[in-house]
Image (cartoon, rainbow, N blue to C red; front, side):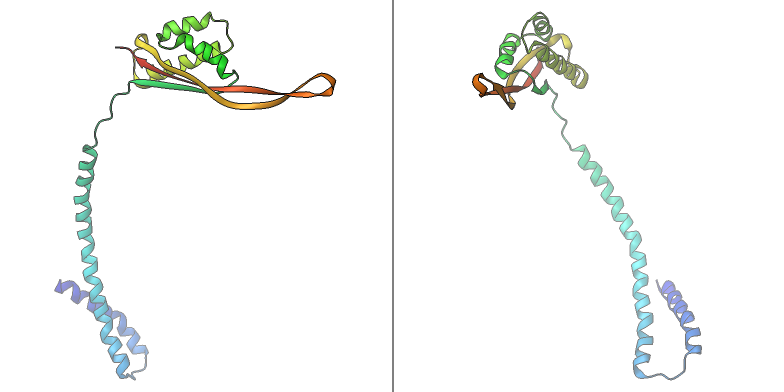
Length: 190
């Protein structure tokens, strides 16, 4: 430490030496005090430079702690169900529920066969929804397609478009065009 401090003081004096030759040699008590304080300030900076490597050592110690925290994370539980939803489908919820009730609890393959031959308004939309949920189950979660069944399926109200229907004698009556939100959950049967 003593060697580096001496070098810093010597460099500071060399820098100040040309300035002293150019400046007049009149000195007052205040200027003398300032000249004495300058090397002390530089000496304080020298130990700070030596503390920088100590920070790197603390960073090295922090890295294994972060690795330990990552190791302690618990494994996620296995996914047992897959979901799908269709928003704002142009079928009234009441008509959709007639179709939905036919396939609830059935195997996915069987439900799709029923919907293929069903002559109802929402049958095609419900079939697409069940196919989507089955695809989510097989592709995203690795479930067996043959063991899938429709665990739960439901229809809720969505937007309602208000329209007018022309009537006799120039009058009009209200007309509500209902849409529905369809949801399905597919699970794997053991």
